[in-house]
Image 1 (tube, rainbow, N blue to C red):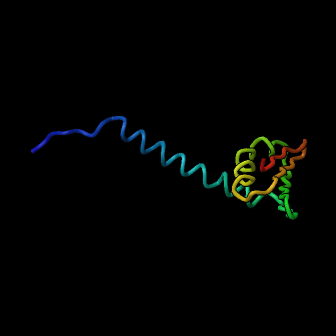
Image 2: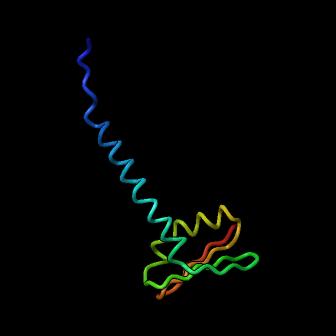
Amino acid sequence: MTTDKPKWWLSWVIYGLVGLLLSVGPYVGGYFLFGKRVDYPHLTERHFGFKYAQGLYSPLGRAEALVCDKDVTIYGTNGYVSWGTD
């Protein structure tokens, strides 16, 4: 018979991973659902109707540019940000 107790930090690691997974789903879903997508042969544009879209979705725009091997431009109401595949 053993009296080993689980480590106190193990439950915090599990809670952190669950929290991360629960927050990543709506973030990625918002990127694909809230933006209007316009495709061109070597460019994808995503148009969002709120102010800080280009700052909020910058990481996903960069990832889309790398995965799809196309230039990606994200437009918000106060400007745009663009990534190339270079």
